[in-house]
Structures are given as C-alpha cells and as structure tokens.
Image (cartoon, rainbow, N blue to C red; front, side):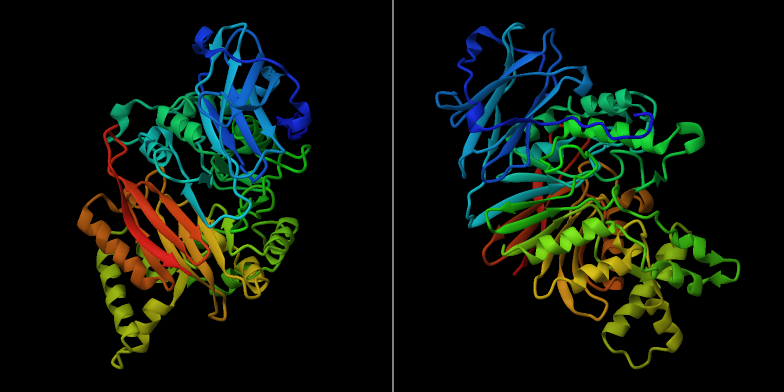
Length: 547
C-alpha cells in the first residue's frame, strides 16, 4: 500500500460443483441483527449474479442460501464463507452456472450469533429478451437530502438499477451539499473530515448504506455500478484530482488505492482480472437485446482536464492556444487500451442496442462564449434573453441579421471541459468506428436531466444521449436560484442555444427509466416531489422515444 498498489477485495466464487454443504437456515431461531448495511446484488447476467452483505457481529463464519421462492422451499445454492477485517467484514458471493431468466431470493445468517439478514431479491436475465427496463441514476449526496429517489426505484418495475457513479461524496461534514434548507435533516457526513484513509472511505460507505431507502433499493433490485470522481476525489483524473492537495493530503496514488479498495468491498463487480482492481470497465449482454458497455471515463486513462478560463487573457480569448490544446491528438479520456477495447466490444456485438454506461456528457454542449463569460453577473439574464432572440432569428433565416449578431450566437465554447467536450478528438475516433451502429449513451455527473442528439463533426447523427438527474446533489438551481419562472426560462434558453439539445431539466431530482424493446428505446425522466421530507410523490416529467 505504501507504494500505491491496489489491494483487491476478491469475490468468493460459487459454482454448481461447490454445492455440497448440507444445512438449512431456520429463521425462526434467528433474529434480524448484525447485518446492519443490509443486502445487495450486483452484475446480473443470464447465468450469474453477485450477492453481498456486511456482518458486524461477534463471529465471522457466514452461511448463505439462494432459492427460487421467498420462503426458501426450493434452495438451489448454499454455502459458508469466513470474512475478516481485511475486507471490513464484507461478503461478496459471485454465483455462477445459474439457470437463465430466474427470480432469485437470498439471505445470510450467522448461526453462532443467532443472526439473520433480510431477504434480498435478484434475477438472472433471459437469454433472449423482448423487453428490458433499466433505472439509471447517479450523484447521491447524503448531506444534500433524503434518498427518496432510491426508494422510488426500489418500488418501480425496473429490472436493473444502473448506477453511473458519485455513489457518495468525499467532502467533510457541512461541506458540499449542505445549505439553509436541508440543514435541519442533520445528515452530516461521517467521518466529519474529508475522507483520506482506508478507514475513512469505509466509514463513509457504511454511513450511506445505513440509509433505509438505499438499503431497500439494493434489497429489491440488482445494481450494475461504475465509479465517477467523488468515490475518490472531485474532478479526478488518472494521476490526480482537483480536490486533492499533495502537500497537505499526502500521496494521491495511496489515497486512490484506499478508495478503490473500499469500493470493491462495498460495491463488488464481476471482473475477468481478479488481480487488478483498477479495471472496472466491462460488458453485459443483456438478453441479446442490449449490449451494455460500462466505461471508466475517470480513473484509468483520463488526462488532466483543461480549464476554459485559462485561455481568457487581458486582451481577450486566446483562440489559437486553446485550439492547439483541445485538438491535441494524444489527449484521452479513456486511455488507448480501453478505447480500443470499447470499439471492439461495439463492433463485435449483434445486440439491437449499443449502450454506453458512463459518467459524463458526450453530447456537444457548446454555448455562446458571451454567455459563458456573463454567467453569475448582474446582467446575465438580460444577455441570455438577447442571445436567445438572436438565435431564434437565425433559426428562422432572418435576412436582417447583422454579422455581429450572428457572431454572438455562433462564437461558441464548451461550458464543461470535464466532460467529453474536453476530449473531442477521442470522441470523433469513437464516432468514426461505429460504422452503421447507433449509440445510446447513458450519462450522469451533472445532477441534471438532459437529452442530446449526438452528431459527429461532419454533421452525421450517430446516436442519442440520455442523461439522468441526480439522486440528491443540487443542480443548476444552486447557481440561478429556485424561482420557477427563472428556471423555466433558463431551460428553454439552453435548449435553443445548444444545437442538438432536445430536453433539459435544471432543478429536479430523480432518475431515468430506459425501456428497451426490439423496435425502440423509451426514456422516461422520473422526478420526486421532494428530498426534504419522507412523504413524496414520483412522476414522469418527460418522455422521448428513439427507434
């Protein structure tokens, strides 16, 4: 660890040949206790799934059972494992050689401590699926509000929850996410400091997994997860992060090693290389209907982000220097190994839908440079209204437009270089390699809901982007205020000013339900009415269909 090596929390592998332990768990003699973080399942396929729990009792020999019925009359697999402090007493059983298209029930017990877990529910996928529902989420900040979005997903008819990262936040108590409206919830981070050590990261996971809504989602639905930046530190890249100071917070590689070890303990994932905990990118063939390619756009290959404001000087925007930097062919978000792997996964798949499960927006989010510079200023709304009026005239082919007016809306810059906009060369490489296959990209990270049409540099349409709102992390309302009229105007303005942007919600918390069939994918953005009270409603705020 001192050298920054990644320590792996391996999955325990169970196949049919292991099924030789003859016992039955009698729940009438046991009490629901000591499994304080609940149960969970991960990475379902048509023949495998991972089941998980953590134990906090007195002894560490854990029994487990899997059945096809909730009463455990038809037990199909069981076993015993011993956990220990090296993995913070977590248990992850990777069940292989299962039958396809099954509803499964599982539980854990410690007979010596007379303890039993709640019953978890999970699935194996059909070999050939006609319909598949993915509930897509990201950005859950414990301090920012209640996890009603997890509760809504738990009670939905989703087959799988796809979590695109920022499962937790690394900031200390009272930091990012806390404001005057939600402080009364008293959901301050534990430990109270920004997390740096292995024990810090483990404690933060345990706090988040103590939340009853999150526990329910894990109990009721299998998850497919990938990390983003906050599982380590804000705006992370392959050898550093914006929210890491080497001088005061120590070696970044050591911090990353601690973070990824804790991740593997609490969010296990199936991997072909059991010796490399950094490789989280992987593919799921979901019923020969969806080829879900989960990417790591954050840790394994990303070059350090550019900052658009570094190119503004006293004499104006240094376009030449910016263009040289942004067009650098060696800059990468994925790393060449992962990028080549991605292209091969897409080109070798015969599934109807090629779906990227990844963290950051892929669509081109280019806004007028004038708007970017004015953001946060007193006359921002006035400038925004002027730009919208000009853009509408452009769209209507107004012959009276002046060159100066046209320049105001066509001189555009990406608003966020932490997304794919900061790595446009690599984005074009991927687009060019698609041949006739169309992409559906899933994205999180921004805390807001988006729908983009994806265009290659030459104008060819290559796919669609479906981006989810955050579970609880604040969106644009934290910058522009919570006045409904202002928010609505801002949403409409961006939809007009940004080419390819079809839908945008700037202020609500929720998730994305993507329903795949042989003929179409229907995307429903589901929003909860509140994250400040346990009483909430969930409603579909917008729907698009793509075929």
